[in-house]
Length: 325
Image: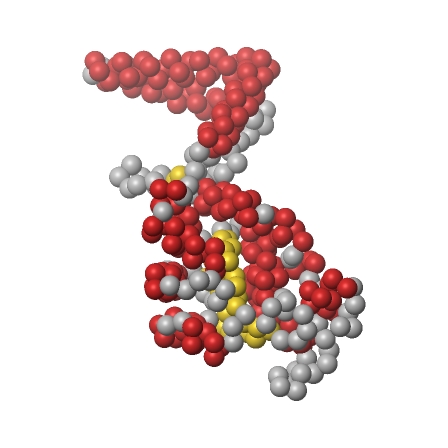
C-alpha cells in the first residue's frame, strides 16, 4: 500500500507540474480555474442563505466559464496534459474499487496481481518464466519414435499437448477448463505449466503457482502457526481468487487429514466459482486414485482434461545437448 501511495503521489506531483506549466503558457486557463473555484465557494455560501436568484446567476456564470474552459482545452490539446496519469485506470492507484458509497470496496485486479507478483519474486518465478515459455519451447527434444504402448510418438503427443495449452491460453476467460498433467519426472509437465503461466500473466490475468508441498505447508502453518505468517489472509484469498491456480508436483507433499480436506476444499471451491486450475503430478491415474479421496479423484475425472506425458527425460537431453537421447 505504501507503493500505491507513492505512485499516487508521483502522479499528483507530475500533474501539478504540468498544470503550472499550462498556466504559464495560457494565463486565461489559470484565470478560469481561479474564477471557477471562487464560484464554487460562492454557491456553497448562497445555498446556506437560500438566495435562489443569486444562486441561479452564479450557476449560469459557472456553466459559461466551464464551457469556455472546455473550448480552450480542446483548442490547445490540453485534456491529457491536465488529466492525472494513473498506472491503473480502474482503481486510480488506490488498489481498491469503490462502486458505490453503500457497497464495500473490492480489491482491484492490479493489487491482486501485485501481491501474487511478490510471491513470485520470493520464489524466483520471474526468472524461471523468462527461460521457460512458449517462445523457448523446443519440440525437437521429443522423440519421433512411436511408443508401442501408447500408439504414438512422444513428439506427436507433445504437439497435441502444446496445442491444448495454447488453446487453453487463447480461450481463457471465455471457456472454463481445468487440466491434469501426469507422467514421470523430466517430461515437460512443469515446463508447460510455466508456458501457460507466462502467457496469461502477459495478458493481465492473475496466476498463482505453488508446488503441492509448499501449498500444504502453508495450509498447515495457517492452521497451527498463523501468527508467524506474513499476510496469511491475502495468501489464502489468492489461492481461492487467482484467475489460474497451478499446483505442481501433486503427490510429493506430506499428506495428512488436514491437507487432504483442505486440498478438496480448494479444488471444489474453484470448480464452484469457475476458476481454472492446472495440476501436474508424477503419479499415474491408478496411484492418484489410491492416494487421494474418492471426492478428489472423482473431480479430476469429471472436471479436468487429463493428459499423459511419456518418453525420455528431456532434462538429460538439455544437459548433454544431444537430441538423439
